[in-house]
Image (cartoon, rainbow, N blue to C red; front, side, top):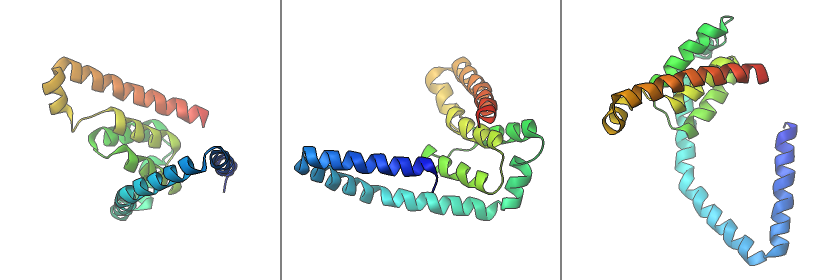
Length: 160
């Protein structure tokens, strides 16, 4: 366990104890409500795990490492950004998926490029966006989002 996880747990426990001391009944009610929310989310969580397993089954770790972990970070980032632009995956699935890509050897910059284009660029949703907002707006937003995603990936590569 890393230091950030330990700090998170310590802070959470301290705040929980403070909440219990302040109002035991409200804390118990909040815990019951959160348990109900967790019951509703368990299906989604299992789905996320299943989807990541499917992706890692059909795309072997060696392939991920060879494409996203190559020495040519710029080319890997562009390939990842294009794949992220075309793919339509909910963000709550994308974050663990990208984490698993990094665990099997993908570089951080292409992984961030994939993640940011996945959430910011919408090739699949372009027809709907064009219909609602107009062609010029949809193209401009997607091109600017693609460029911003590559910039964000490069900045994250410098930071991390």
